[in-house]
Image 1 (cartoon, rainbow, N blue to C red):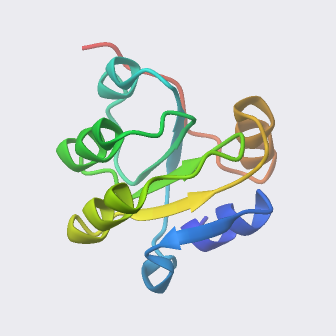
Image 2: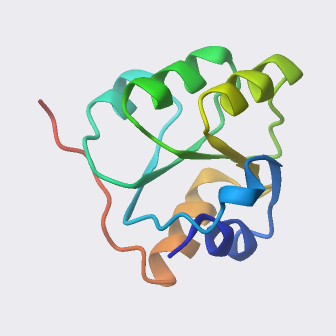
Length: 118
């Protein structure tokens, strides 16, 4: 699945990075606690979160997460969008809650998920 397909499936939109949205994702992580995200070690992961602060972008950058979708209608600040652009991170958003977003992605075939504790 590509980021573009995931955003479309979630009836979402892009804040930045749409030009790179053909990026293939293999797994997804839904979390509002960045410590939980740090325990999720996977390749080509899509992060779904309702946490809208610069720490989200910094955590994604640290873990080489290339795409984030904000759930529950949350919108990143202009500073967060600028930070994501600098880090080449795709930002999208959906009005759907976390539970439905994860469920729709799972139903569409994005089966890898969960956490691996280190």
